[in-house]
Image 1 (cartoon, rainbow, N blue to C red):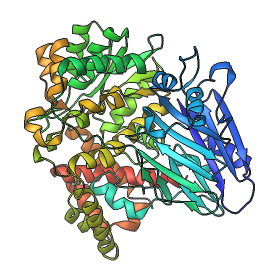
Image 2 (spheres, one colour):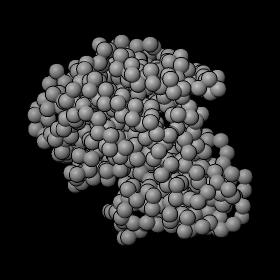
Image 3 (cartoon, helix red, strand yellow):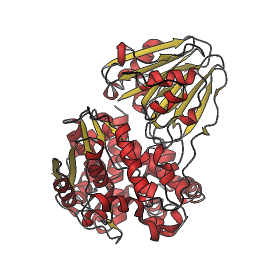
Amino acid sequence: MSGLAGLIRLDGQAVDTTSLQATLRRLRHRGSGAEGLATDGGLGLGHRVAKRGPGGRTPPIQLARQGGFFVLDGHIHNTEALCRQLGRDPAPGESDSDVLAEWLDAGGDLQSLNGVFALAWWRPQRGELWLVRDRYGVKPLFWTRLPGQLAIASEPQAFRALDDFQARPNRAMVWEYLVAAMPCGEEGLWEGVYSVPAGSLLCIDLTTGPGDPVRIFEIPAGGPEPDTAELHAALSDVLRRQCPGNQSLALALSGGLDSSVLAALCPEAGLQPQCFNVSWEEDHPIWLPSVRGDDSESAEEAAEALGLNLHSQRLPDELDLAAVQKAVARKGLPLCDTSELAMDALFRNLGAHAAVALTGDGADELFCGYHFFASGDKALPWMSVRTAVLADLLRPELATDALSILRERSRQVRYSSLREGLLLYFLPHLLERLDRFSTAHGVELRLPFLDDALIPFAVGPKDYARYRKAPLRAVGARLLPESLAQRPTSVFPPSRGEGLSLHAQRALGVALRSEGLLQDLLRPSALGRLVRAAGTGFEGRVLVWRLLNLQLWSRWLAG
């Protein structure tokens, strides 16, 4: 587990290492074991890591032949293959960064890297800093422009250490959060902060500044249904590579198909993880026939059938506002729904027992698991709240601009294919949440379904009725009881009980009594109506939760 930061002067001055160290301190939760810095005139990169590498070597890593240096946040999963292409065997104890340094020095291409990573690579011969993210955007990387310089970091919170940075909400993106909770591009809720897009390279010239990002990792197109035996073998191989058997390991076992298959494959890979599950005391069924909600009973069934130890926690449907505030601070963003409280609790439990955790994320995208694949190759559903409902809340002078922004965002999403929409917008949004909550609790993620070795097994989205994760169900049928192998798709558990919604409704009413972002944006009379009637409809409950979190987050930003 690690984090990176950097400063890039655009005015010819030398980089301020004191400021760079201050940004790294803001990332201490991503790695408190060691800190490294490297500078070259107007550029400086820093790195925090959970534990020091072999021989005490700490990034940034210098390149002997090409010059310059790089920092890597994350893991390269195919280092053995890279070593073979370099004409040698892997050396005992060498790190991913050691292999990557040799690969880059030899002129190796970035597209050959299989892993979850964010890379910052200073190339002095070109006068450029290259920022690169893995194919799906598992590891985050952000940048912002300040007077005379740019700053980069693994999380926007790090920029708060810089004197010239003003932590403010991006009002142009507030509307998107309220109706969709999902950013659709490089811009996010922090004003002036941009994300390097998943699977892309952003080149920063020390004279002219950043260019346009270029996608260098292709989106898997999907193909015909794969062979079950080959998929089974590939999944087992991915687990062996990603999870050396001598490490402390946990598994987020929801009880759904994806995590249950991983649980069944672990013994084949020589792994014996501790399993963890979080659910709610009060819950209501989801209304979609193809989707199930609370999987806690299935998690118990899977653990018992496979002989694994399961740690379960049921969360009360009573709003703990202090817990919400802490979760908002850990995420650095308002919570999208109550499932993020469960996610925070899950990783807190995981972090108390293990340093590395497996999750089943990515299987729905790879094997057509979401119910909206039934629409064929159309864009994914984007809005959970209608724009007309939001417009009724806005101050009149803001409504026109807000609706114009939302219409443009909607076109951006709906002109994408379904798979593009999932992998460009939807999945990075989910992965950012996972990264924030896992690193906050000292947990390094492993996501086997997002390994590049599984790309040949991805299925196309046009035949959802036929697939519905059929390839993975066929593997599950070899390993699991039929009740688990054929279980409908599940979702990470939000509370759908009325108790938490009513508590959130009351908390929002209290929050509105003091000044904050909401008073500037929304009509007081409409807010009052929403608070009083929130329990009567789905959109009302969603808006109450997001408005409450927006208010809490804006106060946190203000310090």
